[in-house]
Amino acid sequence: MEKPNVYYTDFRTVAFGDGLPTKLKKLIKKAGIEQLNMDGKFVAIKMHFGELGNISYLRPNYAKAVADVVKEFGGKPFLTDCNTMYPGSRKNALEHLECAWENGFTPLSVGCPIIIGDGLKGTDDVDVPVAGGEYVHAAKIGRAVMDADVFISLTHFKGHEMTGFGGAIKNIGMGCGSRAGKKEQHCSGKPHIEESACRGCRKCQRECANGGLVFDESTRKMSVNQDNCVGCGRCLGACNFDAIIFDNDDANELLNCRMAEYTKAVVDGRPNFHISLIVDVSPNCDCHGENDAPILPNLGMFASFDPLALDQACVDACLAADPLPGSQLAAHLADPHFHDHHDHFTNSSPESEWKSCLAHAEKIGLGSREYTLVDCR
Image (cartoon, rainbow, N blue to C red; front, side):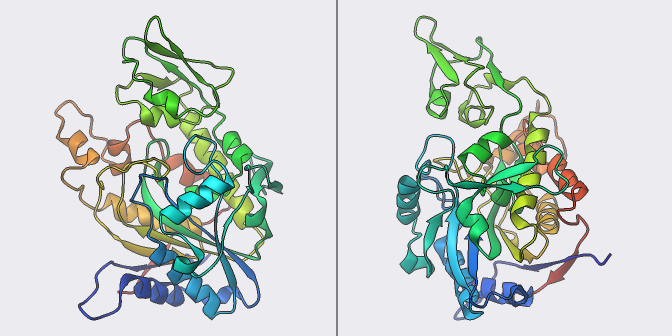
């Protein structure tokens, strides 16, 4: 079988030349986006609008560039994302839209409507069969996402505290799941809290949407209510003292496998195209209400019809790059007691795991890990 193409360009521009949005338009046209036959079709552009307080998410200018190309080929684009299951500014459609607007995503700035995929309360979903699924038989996907005739993902490629990195598969699989779908993907593995390490700061509790954390005022320590905890891992990212430990050693692997199967549910049986920008590579997800210094340089824009090949190409580009000074990754590597895993994602977040996602995606036929890189610079 012929290897899928992954098209690439860098972030370099020249004075008085084309800006980056125009460069992105040229890239996705060279990648053949017009093959999607978008004329008169509803086209979902799935992206992340960023949590309030976070400024590493993709700028609206990139979204407009993609929407403009869709309209040029006769499509009817809309930007979409589904609600979150944790506290924050995107847990229902009203707050989600206000968050998107505050972060610069409006119909005027992006040139198309913005629709929250799973409705007002995150309950408007549809069960989508997963062909070849081992962990998920029917994925719970936001209805508006599945109602679209054509699907495009626009991904900010970055680090992640659980899955190692957030690429196209995470943007699609986790991002298109309804609130119930996100809970299903996260339901393996629950943490416990090392009492001796807990400082009683309660930052973890503010991240829990499910009553899974209980604070004892007498001891000033936190504990986990195992009946309420869904294993989402938000508390892990909030703890600065390594007090939270996941008991299921393969929880991240199971999350990755379910995420890959959710992605397959979204893209199977309809035209789809995928774009990833390796820029502002924060160590954690854009779901955080803050962002740390980038761990890697701005490496480029990538596009492909194959989401797995796209993720693999972005991983390869990241692993070949040098860590940025002053970042979480550089700090870990500078620590004489730190064990070097020779992997930027694992070195940045040692509790994370990413390889199982790509391996399982290939196993279930989501795409290919082998690819041909087409340099469009």
